[in-house]
Image (cartoon, rainbow, N blue to C red; front, side, top):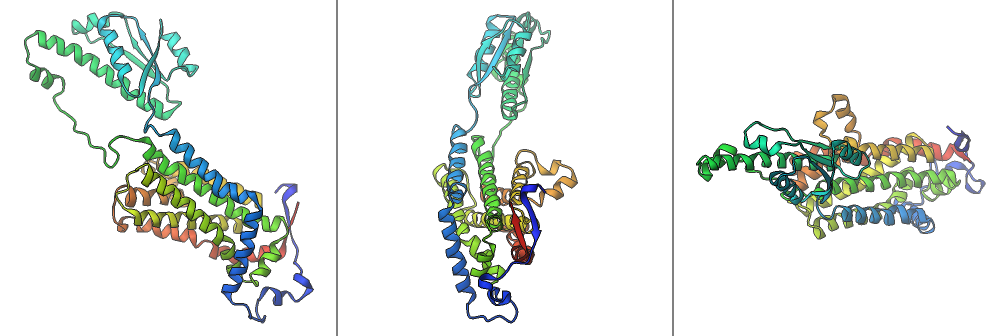
Amino acid sequence: MSADERIVRQPLQSVGGGDEDGVYGTAGAPQECSFVKRLCDVVRRECGIMRRNSMYLFCMVVFPVIVTVFFTSLMSAGQPADMPVGVVDLDNTSTSRALVRKLDAFQTTEVVARYASVAEARQAMQRNKIYAFLYIPKGTTSDLLAMRQPKISFYYSSASYTAGALLYRDLKTISTLGSASVGASVLSAKGLTENQVMAFLQPMVVDLHMINNPMANYSVYLNTMLIPGCLMLFIFLMSAYSLGTELKFASARDWMASAGGNVYAALLGKLLPQTVVYLAIVYAYMFYVFGVLGFPHPGGVGYILLLGLLTVLSSQGFGVFVFGLVPSLRMSMSICCLWAVLSYSLSGTAFPLSAMDSEIRAIALLFPLRHYYMIYQLNIFNGYPLDYSWPYVVVMVAFAALPLIVAGRIKKNVMTYQYLP
């Protein structure tokens, strides 16, 4: 632990010099104040802190709104379009030029440059001027007409996974179409009918149906996970921040005194105003993507409301739990940030969790975003009943209940530790 964040054990004196048990309401103390009154006192105190500290405004409202607008605007087209591609056409015949025009007609591909050699095209790709290029060697057309199986090559960069995958699809398709068009011309010249030519070139026809997202809208796949992950990150951080600042600014005794020494009233009263704001933000995000943008949600509104509630409560529970284990403002926030970032890799959206090692699959269960994703895809995206996702719901509830485990430790830290800057 760094020198600027040392924590020492020191019993705290009671407020006003009175008996400590009498102030905090422990064993033998008078119980004039009800739990509800103590809770309301802490809620009022927390609302005042949130009103005075602009950090709450930015991290609970401004930044989540910016993240939502940014990602949804960035992927408003559904999927990337007109990505730059180069061509090295050493054959330069009508057939090769037609092939290039067909490649340029694809939605995701735009031929922006023609190069005289493979070396020039490779340098352009290394400089990020193009994502891929098609190489058509000299004599390709004559070899095609003579049925000598010429070879054309295409190169693509996987530095950008999405761009590489989409351009690989287009380049592979145009390569197949090029050979098929020449083959169709040759077979037609030999007297075959159109049906016979098609049966020869494509003996099996694939009838593809994409469930719930027929347009392959990448915003549906990515924004339903990127934005909730960011929202969870903010909730993690602010839950730990709101507790850590009580120690840092020496206001922990006042916090516990306003709760009458009841740590559950103190925690619940501190988190309740934040919960209301987070629920408003999460539900506003869900209304925007599912209602305004029209993301598919055959599961209905009930599952959306349930998932929003579980998201907020589980994220707050995890943030409080981390602070209970590590009663340090900076360290607890760092752990929460690290946990949120790792959630993207272990949620199963970019890479299927079933293809990972068993140890990684076990670790993934410790990340709330993984369970969010499973509930979303089962109940909201595919419309399955809750019977399919009840284990993930139980785990989310368990995350929300984590503060119960560390409540006693938090009270001990508040009453016996003093933050030293």
